[in-house]
Image (cartoon, rainbow, N blue to C red; front, side, top):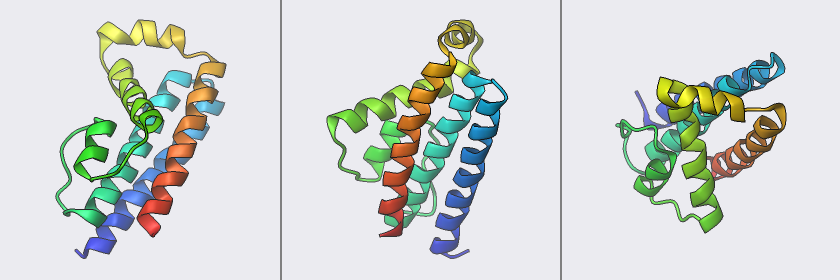
Length: 130
C-alpha cells in the first residue's frame, strides 16, 4: 500500500468519526461524542505522522505524544488542548473515571470542547494537505 493511500485511510476514518461525533452529540450522548472526537483527532495526527515519518504509526492514544513524535511545533495553547482532549479517551473508557466525567459532560461542556476539536481538525487537515 502506498504512503498516500495510508494517509487517506486515516483521513477517511477521521472524517467518519467526526460525523459520528456530531450524530452522537445530537442524540444527547455528550460523553461519547467527546470520546469519538478524541478518536477523530488521533487519526488526523496519525495521518500526519504517516505523511512525515513512517507508515507504522505509534500505538498510543496520547495526542500530545503523537504530535511530538511527528515533529509538530505546537503553541502552549495547542499543547494544553491536545493533553486535555486526550483525557476524553481515558475518562470515557475507564470505570473509575467514567462517572465523574459523565457528570461533567453537559451540552455546553461538549459544545465548547467540540469547537476545540473542530479547530484542531481544520489545522491538522491544512498541514496534511500542504
